[in-house]
Amino acid sequence: MTKEILIISFMFLFAAMTVTWQIIRTAQHVTYITLADGRRQERSLPMLIRLVLPFVGMVPSFITEHASLEESRHRINKKLVAGGYEGLIEAPEVIGLRIMMPLGLGTVLCVLLGMSYGSMPEGIGNALASRQYMIYLLILILLGFYPDVWMKKSVQARHKSIERALPLVLDLLTLSVESGLDFMSGINRIIQYRAIDPLGEELIRVFREIQVGRSRKVALQNMAARIDHTDIRSVTNALVQADELGTGIGTALRIQSDQIRVKRFQRAEKLGNEAPVKMLFPLIAFIFPSVFLILLGPVLLQMALRGGF
Image (cartoon, rainbow, N blue to C red; front, side, top):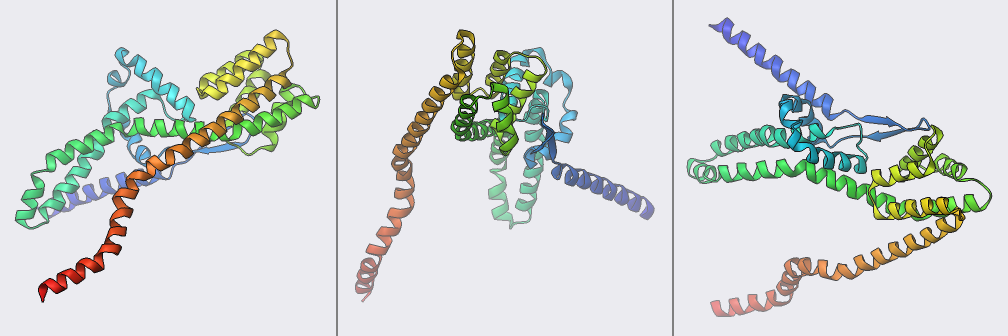
């Protein structure tokens, strides 16, 4: 009997060590994307997704690749491309994450909660355990929405970076074109001397597509479809129209640069006007009670002491 217990204990220890090693290796994994000019850009998934991603294969493929989910997969692919994670994670894996994160992590967290309830005094533990099902349901809902929240945040962060860099890049491209360089040489000069950022990655892809034989119109339209941002779409439409009509690209670039800079200032003014409204809740919830406590606290304390006498 003792030998059987030792063997079972050893097997459980080996399994725990294997799972722990897999989790640590997955958590430390970083992916590098090689760009068209040979430089490498670090790209890594959030740790919570990296921990669950190896177990997504347990989800049956007929669920993640069902024909009824074709539209959902298309939307997910579009968000992954816009967020800069193309080739690092696929749409069926995201659908699998929506299933595995609530079932896997939600179960582990709720088991830990149940263990913590059991270690409490009987009355408190029973009172808290009665709400365990509601907490479990809440955890399932939150973990189920996490992949979509992550994709949305990634797209917003990438778009914000492109918005900040676009006016300067357009100015540099305008100066390059007006100084005598062609469009390809201007893009090549920009991507050579700028640090790698989301807009630089897209310009490298445009440069590479034109090099392999695609027309400038198709390369620019592909960039607009990948980024899926109104400013980029406006710039590409202006460049395509200028190319079709035979007008100067420098003039179109300068006009677009001025318009985007005006939009940038308008967005800043909008955020500035929204700031007082956003500060209203913290002001009422945190600052006003502190001010009232400082001003009226001594008076109330004196009134309480006098009433006690």
